[in-house]
Length: 490
Image (cartoon, rainbow, N blue to C red; front, side, top):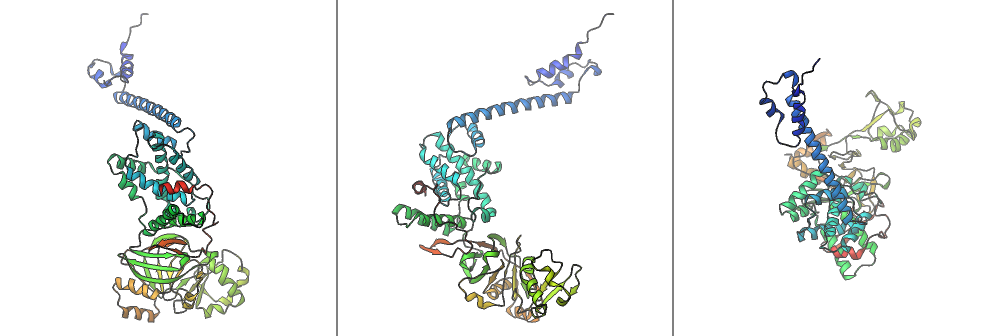
């Protein structure tokens, strides 16, 4: 039996394949071949989708091949150099045909100044090594440009993450780990370069804190004149400068320097209030943090935190249940029922966790929180408050609390904030006298910065505070800091 040839079975496949090499579409063919049996045809949309997917796959293959070639070229250029982000460098420079990026001298000078300050703090060994490579490479060599970019990528990551990572990065030894910034951040930077806004971009992510700038100036001056007793002095200034860089200029908000036991409240650049404070004892440190005041509580009750309950109150109640009445303590069981301290066997909970009771101290002049509490969102349940024991503010060492910050001039601080909320001083006094707990929302923007700086330069003078938590570590500077190189850029 003779078989009749059916060329239309093969034609769509030919068109599909040719579509990978031409701009013709399969639909053009079928529009011109109306007499083709539909049963012998293929789905037009499916065919076009297959063509698009094939083209996309080919483009991805070409892009991957190009990236691999760029990485190979970058690796060859940067052989034996301590770069951190080689694939990203290759991608950036391949897109520019390996043309230099750092052609704005002001932008480059500003960045290397900030980077040298970072290196001087000893936070990153890899940054110190990279600064050495930058210094040793001729400035007209593309390798120098690439090394500066590699350092800048790490610097962008640092500036973005350090505000939320300060407690671990700036107050613990050898805890900083460099990483690549987000692709979005890199794109914004390269866009600024393209639009001749390189200096503006670099200046934008540099610290504006004037104490930070003054402290760096002193380090640079000491290096230039040789007026320094030891590298340890430079190192300590540089480390504390990095702690200052995360604090904005002192224009608006409440600033508490933990080791100096001082609170400063600024409005529109003016110092409105200075007050002594009591901070956490070394065993219960006040954390470095940023938050924002949310409300003032007049006549606040005190809900005893679990740590204080287990470590302090339970042993007291085990010795003397009558302490509860004398201290105006209310005790509640797991169902919320009030119980007498005499009806609980406190001895069984000494040195135990998971105590099935909640204790609250009534509002009043003898409350642990005093007459005012200043709330702010905090994962550590940290806040500012008054205290009935004002004699403690006369002590030199005021690391005495369980973590929260006690404010000597809490009445003055409350008066300022309550006036903004529309309260008269008569109203404040009436509410205080009533002993009624009243919460008042904060009306103005009041950021709160709890920071830890033990040495800094202010108005040309070096200021110091005791290292109450031992965060400065060893006084000797890390051996990997080359102060000659730091001086070159600082």
